[in-house]
Image 1 (cartoon, rainbow, N blue to C red):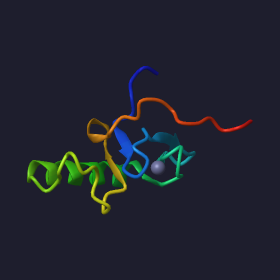
Image 2: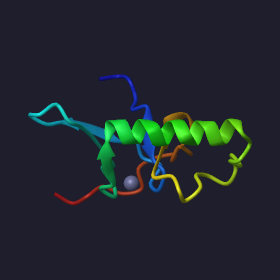
Image 3: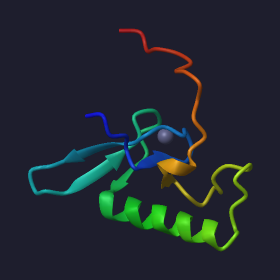
Length: 88
Ligand SMILES: [Zn+2]
């Protein structure tokens, strides 16, 4: 897949992953810290972040306010490179 994830973990600024279980429940999760929620809730939260940004409540230099766990990827501060690799 060449398309990036539309959401990022607000804490890690890492693109989230998506899992779909046998009951078709879509779960979004952060591969770094393990933060997770349903795709529905994550979408709502990203929408709320966008709404707050449009309302001028978010300072783009200040990163994500702590009340958000997930943010739209367009607002993530990109890390230049992965700082470490996990040992096998
Ligand atoms: Zn995370």
